[in-house]
Length: 231
Image (cartoon, rainbow, N blue to C red; front, side):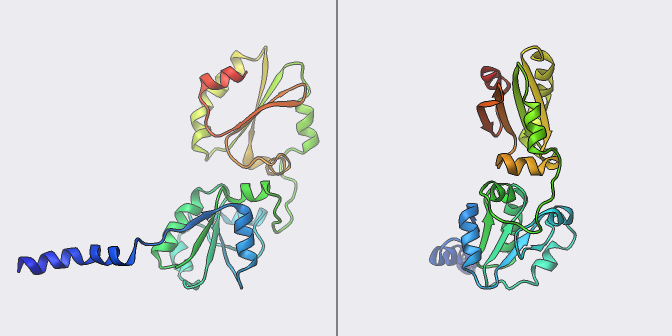
C-alpha cells in the first residue's frame, strides 16, 4: 500500500522531468515586440492598464483588459489560448503579473513588453490614438533650465517604489542645496509629452544640467550619498 502511495506522490515530478519545466512567458524588448506583432496574423494585444491610460495612448489594435479590474480572468478566457498573446502596461510591473496569470490560464505563447509603453515610446514606435500634449512642453522645460546654478530634474511617479524610497532625501536636498543646485521634481504621469520628447524610459530618472547642458543622467534608485557625489 505504501508503494502505491509513494508512486502517486512521485508521478507529477516524474511527468515534469520527462516533459521539461513549464514554459515561462517571454519578456522582450520593444523593437522585437513590435516585429513579432507585425509577423503574427491577427495578433492578440492586451493593454493591461486602466481604461483612462488606454484612452490617452495605446498600441495599434490593442484591447484594454485592466489587470486591476474585477473581471480580468473571465475576459482573458475569451481569447484564443493556442495563439500568441502580447501583453504590456506602462513600465512592466502589471504586465509581468498579467503574463504569469495568462500562463496559469493555459495560454501557450505569451510575450510581455519589457519596460512597458515607456520603453516603446522611447524607441519611437507609433501608438494610437495620436497622443495629445500632456503637461509641460519642451520649450517650457528648457526655460526651467535657465539658471546660473546646476539644475537637477527628477522624474518620478507616485506608484513607483524606488521613487517613494528616494522622496524624503530628495525633498531635504531641495532645501539643503538650494544655494548651489535647483532641484525640480516632475510627476511622469502629469508630463507624458515631455517624457516622450526626452525619451525617458524608466523611473525614477535624474538629469543634471549645467548651463542647460546635460552633465549627468541616471535611471533607477540611487542612494543619497551617491547622488550627493554627483552634485
